[in-house]
Amino acid sequence: MQLEKIISISGKPGLYKLISQLKNGFIIEDVLTKKKTSISNSSQVSLLDNIAMFTFDKEVPLFDVFENIAKAKDYKETISHKSSDADLKEFMLEALPDYDTGRVYASDIKKLAQWYNTLQKAGYITPESFVKAEEAAAEEAEVAKEEKAEKKSAAKKAAPKAEKPAAPKAKASTSAAKSAPKSTHRKQG
Image (cartoon, rainbow, N blue to C red; front, top):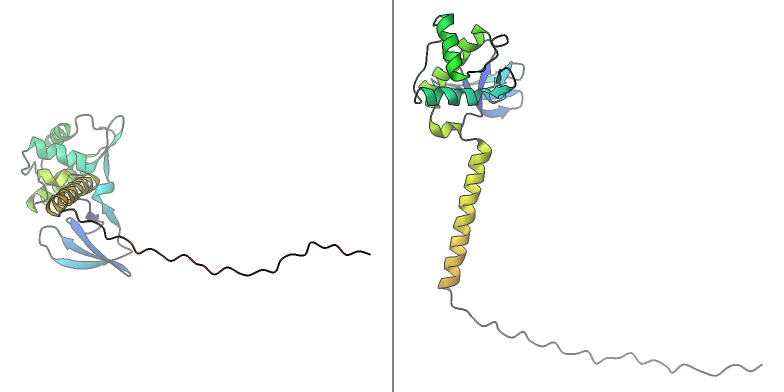
């Protein structure tokens, strides 16, 4: 299961999966209840794939932080988002040791824990979840290429070489335009 189409909607609790686009909105599915609904284009939507967390020297994509948490917790549930601020800060130090304490607020850490646990309960937190779409597509293309080469090799071995039939010879055209001999006489005057 890939995480690229998971969204958060401002004013709506929980996380959602984008299913398809409508003329004036989107069809979404709640990741926990699997209930489908539609939202308008005016809804404020954030793709989790576009969210990053601040460190002192760069921004780390949210899914990399989720992956750190998943590996530390053996892909199981983590701390509750209702835990104390001190416990949440300790959790954050595990998830992203060099996070920027001045720009990552307690509310951000609570949301991180809540989203991670929601995705974990919904079955999205697995080792396969963190394979990037490009990597997965490249792996699939490589497998397809190898299968095609194997089929081609097997077909060559199975089929005996057949002689090509000789192409019929084309008759040469013998019609030549008759031309009048050119006069080499000069007018005398």
